[in-house]
Length: 60
Image 1 (cartoon, rainbow, N blue to C red):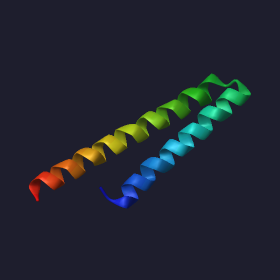
Image 2: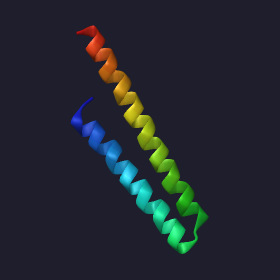
Image 3: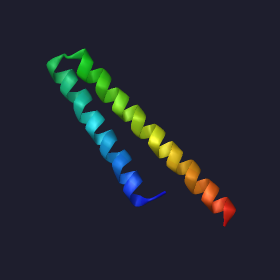
Image 4: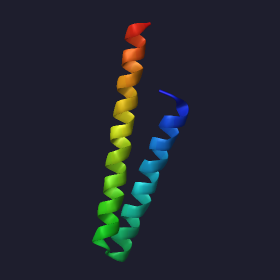
């Protein structure tokens, strides 16, 4: 996995955590849900990149 892709996924996770926290502070359920969705997207991106890395290792 490229470092750039991992950085983007990590950034999305941080963005999601911040948005969820804002939703908790303001009581806005939409912000909380969007924040959790961004965190889930980040996890999926990390998983995809892990699979890519594993395949690449096996091919070498």
